[in-house]
Image (tube, rainbow, N blue to C red; front, side):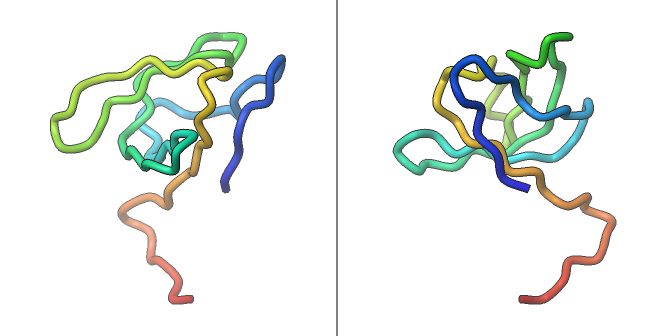
Amino acid sequence: MTTGAAPGAQWPALQRDEAICLIDPSGWPLSGRVDAMTEDRSTFWIQLDGGRGRRLVHHQDGYVVCKLPPEDSPQLAP
């Protein structure tokens, strides 16, 4: 699932420890796991993969969120 948050909207419901990727407005991807989300779903923390730290993401920051399949589920071939 890929989704962006339009101004005045919220992020989709994301679960703690859910694997996601973020794509910034220039197309640069970041991957990691959801660490926490505010009750109003306007903001969440992502713990970035590869020891790159933790980042706060607001729905108006211009990112697109991609939910990644769980690591233990089989991935379908294209």
